[in-house]
Image (cartoon, rainbow, N blue to C red; front, side):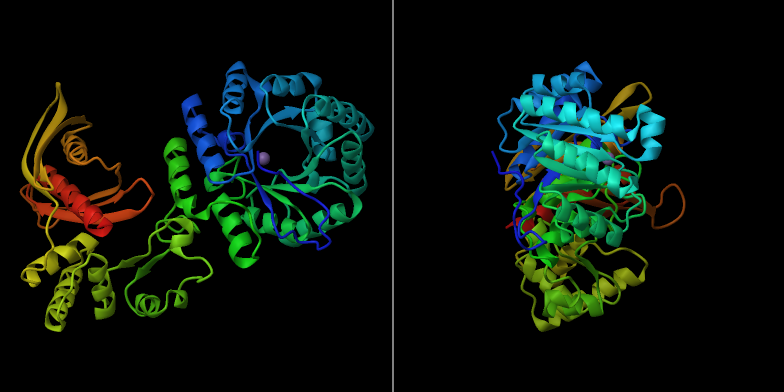
Length: 508
Ligand code: MN
């Protein structure tokens, strides 16, 4: 099992910080999110595989299902330390111990507002309960984390007294939660520094994003001496969520040079997995993992990036470091540099004159107000360069779609993949969905349709439809493609074929 936290560094800022992930507990408390047992196990394996030190698997006392989930995760033999959450009662602690977790996380409200209105206890009673329940928890687990819930709104004297009591009773790590997200980076640093100077126990932080400062507050806590950070994948969690793992880890690693032990190359893939399982999508401008995190519109930026990627990217964080893909977007301000670079990515060599012609055609398409996809670029190159070697790995031969009001939309596709005839049949929600699924079904790759839009090029019901799509591969990398036809089902299928060819071409 991974070593969890450490204490005793003379410097205030630790050179290593451990990561505590609460996607399966706080993350699942996101309104509308509910993971099945299989999904929880899948996420737990991913978290363990990428190097998360502690996985908060759930809150066993909350229901019998939850008890079973936590027990299942604890029995998976994962490398991460498995933690269960418990209110400060013996019954909750026993429920955790019965699940066989490695760590019990005991919490009790300490701020006046929460003490009075939730548990109706005095500060003295809270101290006594902390003393007895933490000791009881320590009898059941080697590792006990104690949380003073709403720490950032608790008086300093009360807070230190409760924490000191927990340490005396055997707590092995103290969590400082900003339960309602009201800390600022400077107040968080001051609070954690004071606690680090007063109490001899490793500190962990749990920050909420109510004012958009969860990551900043988490980093400030590390500046103050915290040795462990609590995060969730994609920052999901109650209300505005928690500190995001990708942002927190990359800021610590790249800006501060602090090691987290996380395999950062798998951050994008992990984000996509949790986005899919939680149903909570990630916006394009989301830091680190968003689709645009390393995308450049043509012009000054892409030219700069081609000369040296650190001109218009952080440099200390690259797409490779987080498992992302740098994308240059084609537009009417596209330059020869960008086009030539994108062609060479697909192993296409253009002569000077051919390159000029390709650039001119890209600009012309863009001037007509259409988005130019990577696939469009390769199609253009294919027509401009004779014998360009832009061979298509997949060619569509036949497509048949049956649809009606009393029939499931069913599509059958026949295509050649690497010269081999392949047939696939799928049902779908309507003819377009069925056709797309049948096309994806002809290749073994796991690809997911992320964007789909149709626009009419001319008016009338016989208009030429232009279908523009983006598909994502299993590692979360995006590929755009498009196609036009007077039949939108056919245009959709062709757009998907184009996307598949693009995936293969860039993989080569
Ligand atoms: Mn929380």
